[in-house]
Length: 268
Image (cartoon, rainbow, N blue to C red):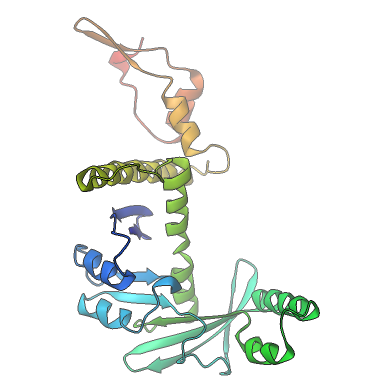
């Protein structure tokens, strides 16, 4: 289970979980270890459950919980009176109170058209029926979110979309850092492996944030930064120490990222 800070754009917790533990029980175990009261936890629909809101309230967390489309509390026929734009996509939204929480319903106009087009193709291929179309069409493009925060729809939607950072972080962990296979069966070894994996991911994002700040993300990757910096190493000659020759490209890169990595007294 991975916790990611949207404010700091950094991973803050990575915890291995037994495969036999249910999601809700695992979440309870982990959030009990997190010292971040009054924070807002953004949870994807894979965790959607009626007990999640009460669980997070118990630990003084705010929450934004994406719901599966089959939740009975969702009224897909209700009128959506408000609008905003997200990445050139038109979004309609509405909100209603459910007890102490708020149910937000969003409609992505472009997504609705895409889902309807796909469904019609399936009907033409005899894989869906007109009755199924009548039942499912009201859900096309709709996204339901339950939250205990009373905010405007755009704020809630943007916070929910930021959950993509978790997916990107997992992708970096598995692919960029190649930490997707442990081949370990000892519990202590697994915990140690995940500790090193977390440090690797944390450093990866520290470098990525430097690239974002310098607006260099589209020009050089984190791995390329590490490769360039690895060309410089420290030489020990008895009690004397010095740095190897520093390529001009490495010097310019360090300056662009505002990194003071090469002390003058150690330069060749």
